[in-house]
Image (cartoon, rainbow, N blue to C red; front, top):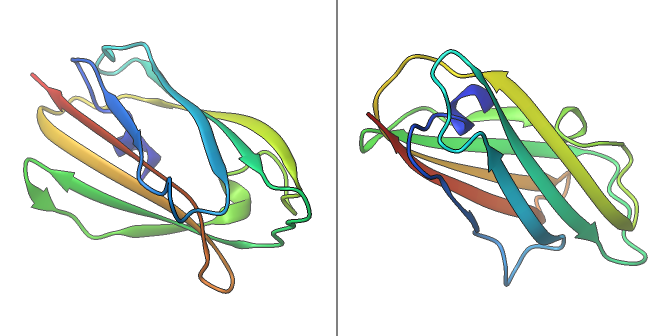
Length: 132
């Protein structure tokens, strides 16, 4: 599913969709190369802070994708496969994921929600882009 996060041939817009209710603070998010190159490598980078006293042992990341205005089935990954370390303890983290860009065209919106085992929202970000 991370493959869909990286689909773009024009500037991607990355936003914090959990700014008021997420337990983690999203400091910055990056995407490069921007624009992406079809069948080339692309990277999403996240810099986030976990507040003092918070430890997360496990959870899930749900990716919701809309491609050409058609919602696709969400996918879920274990949280610990998407983070730098597990358990996640207080501090600031920087993680990046690279993947090969597929050869597709159209508009794309991806929302990633990180939740702990009690279903508390930890982090949420979305990427909106379009391809030619």
